[in-house]
Image (cartoon, rainbow, N blue to C red; front, top):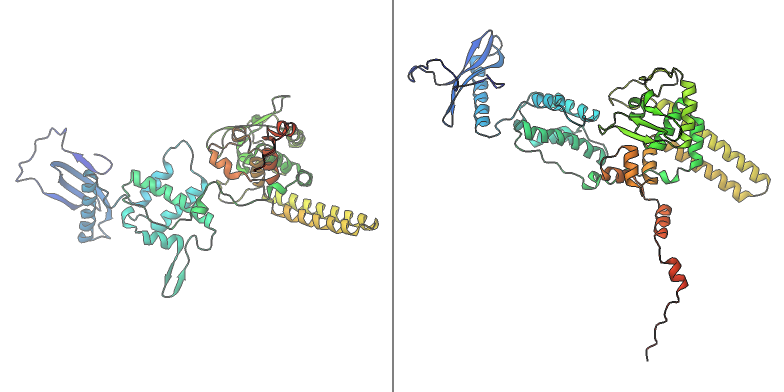
Length: 439
């Protein structure tokens, strides 16, 4: 008997009953308090014996309902044997297969949450019995006589909706390949928001080294070490908090590097460390202590406790520490601006004093927008002319993902174009021929 409750007639050595004594078709039958589909089905010249529970309790289900369910089951078997889609698998079964199937790259936590939401919404309904209107009603909402009923993505940004739909369609494409989903629902997609080479604009080009230095100095040593690694390696926050162990950090002279055995892309990432990051990490290790625990997490909280991986259910656990560092950095920038303003005013330089105050306010506003993920964008922007090295350092597998993180800085592009002007010296030394005057 296979997974669908089918018994093939081939291989049976029992003496068959005469055709006039054999039962025709499949009927519901009571067994152990549940209705079962029992009988023999003939499809395309083949005879298939069926023994399968319908999952309906006899005490709560009448014969007519059991017969209807049995008939639907028979239609599914016919469709499966003839290569048709039929009603498709129950959505809950397809979702369980999708979530538990082994794959080279693990599912993102957000994708797992979205699939669970789909199951909570549609339950065990058959895949081909869920129309496009139901999918649209759940995601985008609908207008009713009582007014507009918001959906799951109502009020969200276009890019957020597109990412949500990408996860939904990844699951539905799996259902189409493995669980007889006939066709995908049709949605209006925003092509501009779907473009992977576009990202939310971050003013990373304005994040000067002096501002980064103030931010580092304002952070607790446990946060400062993390920020230094994120800036140097372009690493994700999740990799820094949960992937690196103490034994993955190597500070031997000339071979300074950190290894992230697991990352979001499913591949190990080895990143080289610069001198500033090495210096900060050495100070951090002195503060951390317990260096004999080689398999312990590298980065700890300010209480010297490991971060708890919540599977991406909510934001990073170091947000409070980073927010405190950012708040102190903003205060330091504003205080320095007021000092410069007072000093310049005493010198009688009123215009310069006003400019210093305004610059401090602008820097404080910029720091107020900075997140840890900015350092990944900053790294990609500064390394955009060396994509192979950048992808190896930060763990990008696709050049399109790397390009999506870069920002076109005008001054950097201008310097690059000027450096490619290999005719500048020759052209200035060579006298350009004068055009002949027309007679």
